[in-house]
Image (cartoon, rainbow, N blue to C red; front, side):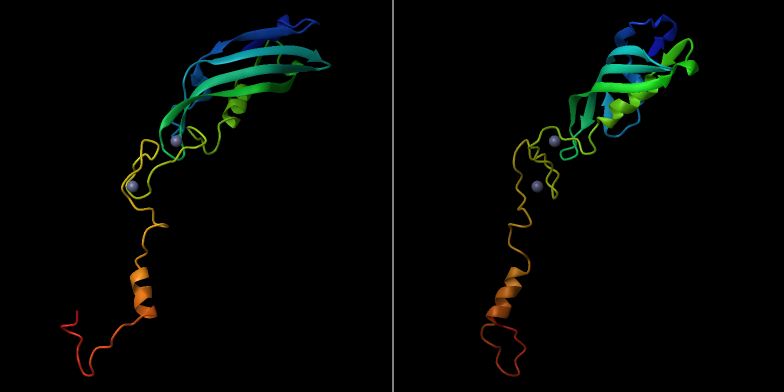
Length: 171
Ligand SMILES: [Zn+2]
Ligand SMILES: [Zn+2]
């Protein structure tokens, strides 16, 4: 829980920084993203009328599963301009910003994470990780189509079988 003691906020505001266990992100059962270390935060709290304005930076090391090759890779979710306002009257003793920190960090997780921009992904036919090398599969769009033999027959039907013949014995 990232907790700010609101009783300590003076006219000049108040700063808090530190680390918070990555469990805060609640990613234990997430299939794509996992916490990979403590969340770091540097926040400044200011009084603005009846409100407390909290701004600063937060970051969390994560492990994400690449949406192309399915390998896990390390990255950091960063929020460089965390900014939230709270009614001071509702937080006379302390302000818990954990939920907003969690939400803002989760918004930084891409919908389709990539281990790197040029990730080649997996072969759709054999599952080989194409970043590690090419497989022996023929890419479907480049290989001979099963219809190409038929197309040739239609374009050039060849000699017809003799009348009345069954076609048996033709070469
Ligand atoms: Zn990848
Ligand atoms: Zn393949």
